[in-house]
Amino acid sequence: MIDRKAVLEAMKEFFAENFPNVPRDGIETMKASEVIQQSLDLVEFVLHLEEKLGLEININTLGERLVTKTFGELADDLVAIGSGSQ
Picture 1 (tube, rainbow, N blue to C red):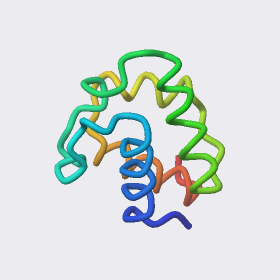
Picture 2: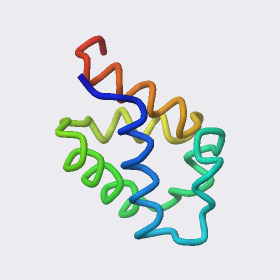
Picture 3: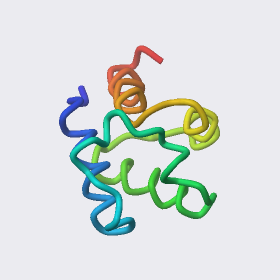
Picture 4: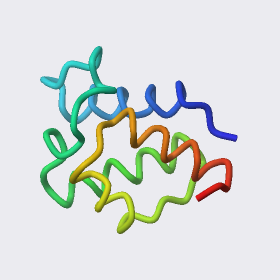
């Protein structure tokens, strides 16, 4: 089972490495599409999360969610995926 806090920490780690200008304190309320705008960044983001969380993530599904959701909502989705309920 994936812990929400672990998902958010993995996201923050990715941003620290790849988007150092993104403030990590308010990440949960930030729209994902405001930060990840290029497809290569999306692929790298997904690969990072898969590696850190031990999940297999369907990038097509996540890509659609990046348009409308916040990182907090994405974290909830990934917890659901990790528990097998999605």
